[in-house]
Picture 1 (cartoon, one colour):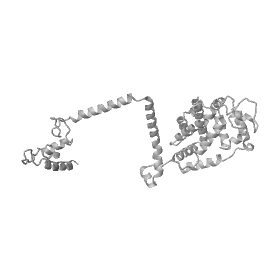
Picture 2 (cartoon, rainbow, N blue to C red):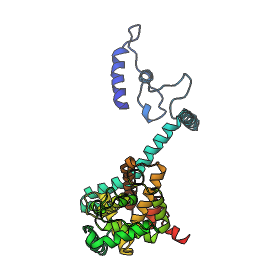
Picture 3 (cartoon, rainbow, N blue to C red):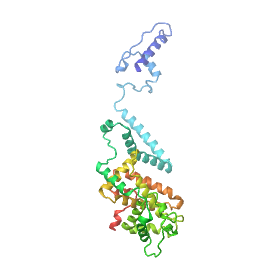
Picture 4 (cartoon, one colour):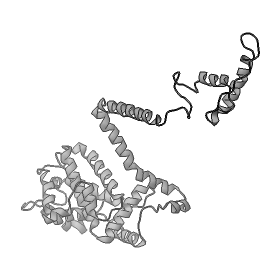
Length: 350
C-alpha cells in the first residue's frame, strides 16, 4: 500500500511541480537513503508523504528508524500502558457495585456454561471428528447401563394400591408421628397432616407410584432426626397451611425417576450416566439421592420463607441444582450433597 501511494504521489508531483515559479524545469533532488523504504524517493515525495500523515512528528524530531533514538519506544509504550491502567482504575472506582455483581454473574454463568456448550457440540459433530478431539460424551459402561435398566424395571412404573401397600403407608405414619394413638383410615382427613393434598394418599401417589412410599420410608428410617426436623416444620397443620411434606417427597421422587429416562438432551444423558454409576456402586444410592434433594428443598424453603404458593418455584430450584450437580462425573451421593449444601453422611457420624 505504501508503494502504491508513493507511485500516485509521484505522478501528482510530476504534474504539479513540472516547473518552478519562474517556469524553469526543476529536477527532483534525491534524498540520501536512511532505510530501504526511502530508496529512490525525492524530497518532494518525502514532503508529500508528510502532508499525507506518513511522518507525523514535530519539526526537528527524528522520524526514520535510523534517526530515532535507541530505546525511545519503551518509554512511550510504558506511558500508554500507564494511561490505560489509570483509565481502567477510574472506571472501576466509578462503577456501581450492582453493575459489578451483574457483570460478575454474567461472566460466572458464561464460564459455567462452557462445558455444556462443548458437550452439545460434541453430540453434533461426526464420530470421526469427536474421536480426534478426544470427546467421548457421558461415560456409562455396558454394565452400568444394565444395572440402571434392571433397577428401573424393578422400582418404577409400579402403582400404589391400598391392598398391596397399606402396611408400608401405616408404617410411614407411625414414623412420622411417634407416640400418637390416632390411626388414619384409607380415606381420612388425617392424611393432610402428613402433607397429602387430599384425604386419600393413593390419589397423590399416582405420579410416582409406590417408589414414593419407599423413598419416604427410607428417609424416616435412615435419617430419623432430620426427618423429624422436616416434619416439625409443618406444626401439625395441613398442606394448604404449611409445608406439603408428602407432596414434596412425591415430586422429588418423580423428578429423580425422570433422570433415569433416555434423552436426546446431552445434559440429561450425563445425569442418567451419573445415576447409573451411583447405582452400580450402591443399590440404595437412589434413596439417598432422594434424601439429599428433600433436605436441600427444606433448606430452600426456610431460606425463602416458603409458602404453599411458592412451592413450585422452590421445587424448580431443586431441579436446577440437582441437574447441575449430576451432569458432572459424579461418583458418590456425598458429592451431590455437598453441591446442594447437604452434608448427608457426615450427620451419621455426629
